[in-house]
Image (cartoon, rainbow, N blue to C red; front, side, top):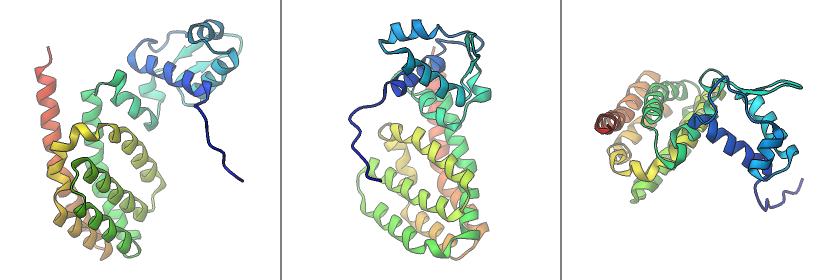
Length: 241
């Protein structure tokens, strides 16, 4: 099937994003009914079918409860939402939510070592070439933000070698949430992405099928920068009135 260039985003997609931002920002608290399709269509300047499609998508995501002939009620996204909400939660209104940033870093440190362990157990030797190439490209990139992107590519290959669809989908969601903040994190993340020798050591452990070493090295690699970032977040949080 030939693919065609998309000229613009769909109206239902735009409606979905606006309503999702309202839910995340607390504009529509859990348990509160949304305005009717007609009122939403008028407020957004779109057709009712576009609103209806967006609401159906939100219903499938567990964000609202759509009842035939009744009101559409907001659900508690903390209980019903998925990891795909993280990018919206991290950058509500354009500013970083420090509590969400902290939780992403904690998840990254908890998941990364286990993924490295699984990669060494399941697919390490077959990942030798791509991991070596990823480390070489990381070492050659002198741009601080570029190095973070190279590090993400490295971890993408580790996740692939781990052969776990659940961890792969988690990685995708964490990456989508993390990438918009790369420029702001460049200084602190240098403590991690500049440790080329540690990436090489982790690669060697994965390729040699040494899961315990891979777990330990991954925890060490991710831990230092994570602790610095968490300390910075705690400091910023404490400075707030």
